Image (cartoon, rainbow, N blue to C red; front, side, top):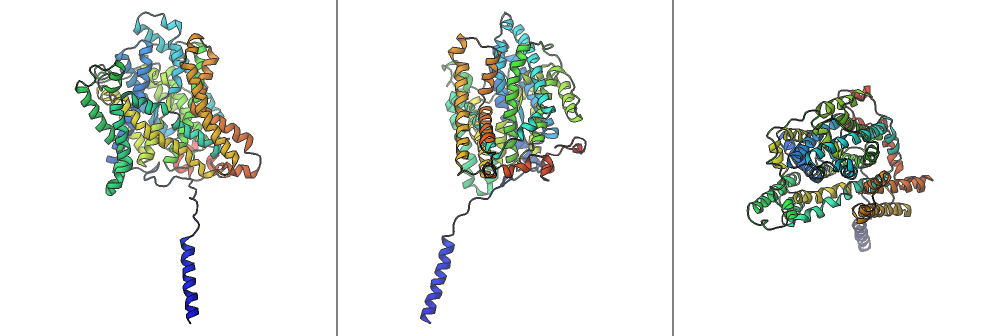
Amino acid sequence: MAQNGGDGNDGGAAATNSKKFEAPQPHSVKEQLPGIQYCINSSPPWPEAIILGFQHYLLTLGITVLIPSIIVPQMGGGNTEKAAVIQNLLFVSGLSTLFQSFFGTRLPIVVVGSYAYLIPVTSIIQASRYTSYSDPYERFVRTMRGIQGALIGAAFFQCTIGFLGLWRNAVRFLSPLSVVPYVTFTGLGLYHLGFPMLAKCVEVGLPGIILMVFISQFLPRYLESKRSLCGRFSILFSVSITWLFAQLLTSTTVYKHKPENTQISCRTDRAGLISTAPWIYLPYPFQWGSPTFNAGDAIVMMAPAFVSLFESTGTFFAAARYGSATPVPPSVISRGAVLVGSSRLCHQSACVLKRSPIEGIGVLLNGCLGSVTGTTASADLYTLLFNSENVGLLALTRVGSRRVIQISAGFMIFFSIFAKFGAFFASVPLPIVAAVYCVLFSFVSSAGLSFLQFCNLNSFKTKFILGFSFFMGLSVPQYFREYFHGGWRSAHPTGLFSDIVVVIFMSHTTVAALVALFFDLTLCRENDESIKDIGLNWWEKFSFYKSDVRNDEFYALPFRLNKLFPSI
């Protein structure tokens, strides 16, 4: 009996030990990201949705103010022209965002300006045919017209790629492995907008990032019942507090004897927007005259159009991930690319591209709102691109609702018309915006890393492709950035080809994506085992729209337009 009892105890102990030392299991693979409280098709209550939409609007102000502040003074424009350009850009961005959410990719993304166009725009500004004008305003007008003409050619290029389905076919070559650096550098490649811009005014930027991280990540641990409140409205809380602090410093004599650059970065009244912006501003056609055309300028503008396709596609993948949707089908990506190209083209030329009613409506709306106007010139001066930081906000708030983005577009349109109020919100110092970017771009980068769950990280080919594409995505653009900003370029004027190469290879996203895709296609498609290592066996079902029934739930066009214009 004693022996039997001992055996029973030993058996129980063995069972307990087997449970205690059970081998850990890896995390399960998730095609759709869990934990998102409101996906693309669901919406939070209206009061909460309005506040969240206002947060997205605040994020658009960073790029909307920064790019005109860089370019307009070089063109000869003053604060009045800069305010007009900002309001026009905001107005067109709002309309394009609405159109994209209804008839484009239908993802919760905001359409804003792109930095890829800064180099060719700068080259046009520095052309002798414009610098010869002694009157600053005349030079501004002439330069604006020249940029408009160059962008018409770039728009034709991008529309052609989308209409012919070339970009759709190119995207089908991607695998989860090549998507990782592609999407990761959509956020990581914008590091220069983070701490370097924050450090221009540490006294407001550093408190901003500390508040942002504390409210969104640490405070919910102590306010269990208000966990979602802290995460969803952390930008509103941190920006408001830091902005008030900056206003307090501005109203005192803290910056009285500081250098001019410090005052521009830190003070809330140095942008010159509030005093020069009218109370009500309505865009009207041909504000600065008809565009002028130069073949060389148009060719150079095609390079950033090519880059914007890469950067927009990376944003699509990240937005789909944080909207708890399936990966974006290539035909939907092509639909979004066409929309941006046609918007740019019709802003400038007032033409109507009649491929389908969807593009025709977009062209008609944008043409009516600003064919060859300040709106189109300002928007297309930097061209439209999908906003990466707004995708980061989807992750921070865990709200990927399409309706929230549409509300933010309404705010953009409203505050661009009532310009004085819009200028007030645009007076937020850029170092405060940079503090927010530091957090949000990290979420965008991590969206790309999440695709590693479909890859075999024990494969040495996988390790090489990931490491090499990441390293070259950082190293190559750094070389071309030094080349562009260094003294060598000033001493040796460059031609059209040189500018095209610099634009393409200064883009971290473009370089990383091209390197990863090249080695993906040449090293990892030779047998079934290699295909499985890069996750292509999982990815193939998302290569065609009809391959997954969930695609209709997220990407179907409204008003049954899918029956008239089916995706493939």
